[in-house]
Amino acid sequence: MIGVTILGATGSIGVNTLDVISQHRDRFSVVALTANRNVESLAKQCLDWSPRYAVMADESCAGQLQKILHGKSTEVLAGPEGLQHVAEIEETDYVMAAIVGAAGLLPTLAAAKSGKRILLANKESLVMSGQIFIDAVREHQAELLPIDSEHNAIFQCMPSAFNNGLKESGVNRILLTASGGPFRTTPLNELHRVTPDQACAHPNWVMGRKISVDSATMMNKGLEIIEACWLFNTTPDHIQVVLHPQSVIHSMVEYIDGSVLGQLSNPDMRTPIAYALAWPERIQSGVDCLNLFDIAQLDFEPPDLERFPCLRLAREAMQLGGTATAILNAANEIAVEEFLNRNIRFTSIAEVVETTLAHVPSHTAATLEIILADDIAAREYARYMVQELVA
Ligand code: NAD
Ligand code: MG
Image (cartoon, rainbow, N blue to C red; front, side, top):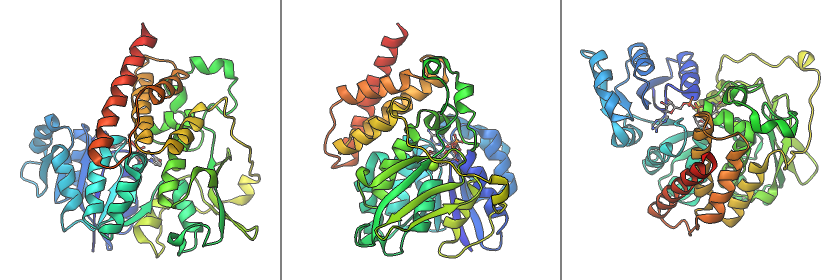
């Protein structure tokens, strides 16, 4: 049996992971499940799955969970130490890293340092700490498998030897597909008054609210360019974003001989999750095969950088290097939270990120401490910017 720990079990990716595992109970067992504050959902999952550990990241909620699970075989842990512990322990073979945001970095890095197979949904880990993270994976012989549908697709279309470098493998470019989100065709002069609910109503995917807003601004695609650079050892100029509104092709790899390989499937995260759980084998995911006659048509268009300034900002941050991508990510987390709380406009998200990037100095990302200090500085500056906008 392979022991799986799910960080962020109550979220959209966490729930889909348990769905896939439920189809393969002979192969996978659940070692630990974690959540931030959602006691009710985590308790229900623990009663269904009897994991060895349950972790409430927010320590103030742990007592409540403990009460519900009293007399059960699940031990309740709390806080960042609890998250780190379950990512490291021997019983854990695979770690699904599905916490949203910067909070996912330390436990995911702990999994890398313990040589686990990491199923990486938390792209923020790589955006914040790219080189340190990749070095930890190499040094401790961890396995890093992308869950993000685009990166999972790219991984599926790459030669197994791509670690030698894309060029040596005959790869010309990565074609990173994007749906364009709910506002792809909204008149530009209406974007300033779209609501959080409109932003979260993604045309093709059901996801957590943070990544849904990121999809609407296309900051998600920007973060994914950065994620792809680290995963596939390449640079932003080798990544072309392709708008593809149907979300059927999840990304493509272009080779020097003119071949383009793509991965197609229904937009359902259980496909990449099943792929990463079983790799290099394939297992059932519960996702229906494509009906190409129903789909009938696949469309492609170049991204509009005026509509989606976050795409440009992410490229700029990656080109700057060092902690600039952590600053970008931190400013975006604050801006998205403030938008979701209806304190700033949708169009102010990019403004907050752009001014934070311009004002908070970045540094060489030599240590985790430097990265985390710049993350904090960026959050402070972004909050100050929000105050200015609200005033
Ligand atoms: P979600 O909001 O649905 O779930 C987030 C999970 O993380 C929950 O279990 C929550 O309790 C936990 N969490 C939140 N804040 C936390 C904190 N401070 N400390 C510890 N735990 C915390 O998010 P999601 O849509 O499942 O996304 C999770 C990650 O996967 C994100 O990094 C996202 O970018 C990535 N991702 C998601 C999808 C998708 O389809 N949902 C696709 C690709 C990548
Ligand atoms: Mg994605």
